[in-house]
Amino acid sequence: MRPQTDTIIDSKPDTRGKVVVEMQHVHKSFGDRDVLTDFNLQLFERENLVILGKSGSGKSVAIKIMVGLLKPDSGSINVLGYDVPNLSNKELNELRLQIGFSFQLSALYDSMSVRENLEFPLKRNLGIYDRQQLNEKVMSALQDVGLESARDMNPAELSGGMKKRIGIARTLILNPKIMLYDEPTAGLDPVTSGEINELILRVRDKYNTSSIIITHDISCARQTSDRIVGLFDGRNKVGGTFDELKKQNAPDLQPFFNY
Image (cartoon, rainbow, N blue to C red; front, side, top):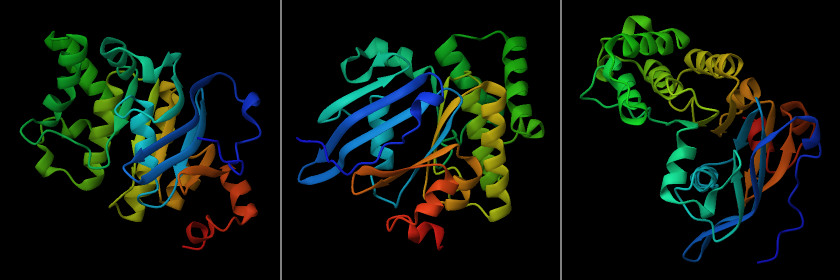
């Protein structure tokens, strides 16, 4: 399948240091429906990259391909030096331990307390069972998201914003190199959304993470992004900083900036 010639790639990648994610000419279809058609992406060390697009535009599919949950029909995907489509299950697990995923609905286990939710990945992925070590790591992660007092609460007792924070804490507890945020402000009021956006920035500064933020919330994109990729019709038609894209006045972006 020939790459689309009108895809616009950010013209300033070489100024940002090491590339940690690179997706080139990625195509993905489900039956007769083309979801990604020549999708290209680069993510750099300590960069917050927003993928902006409408619901159903292929944002989540691109991320699932990036972490090996879906196979592309064609194209190359390199993440932290791993050739993702050709990895064994063992290698995929090694890669995924270095990637944190903050789910849109937080994905907390209702039957577990906050503390138990945070201990779970430490036990399952790192084999840590020492009580003192578990307590130290749990409290450190909760301090990072400002919710030390929620340690013994159950998910049902948490507000939507608190659930988002706990979900981020559970991801951070494994000290990932890359963070993936799926619609981090969905369903939140403007004040809480702003707090989550600030948390995303603090996470990058403390953990030196590279982050991909999937959103259709232009306020989230403005507040969290170093750079934005606009995903429309299955490919990234526009790319640049928030201010650059606002000045471009591209037709695909007008509904977002005029909202």
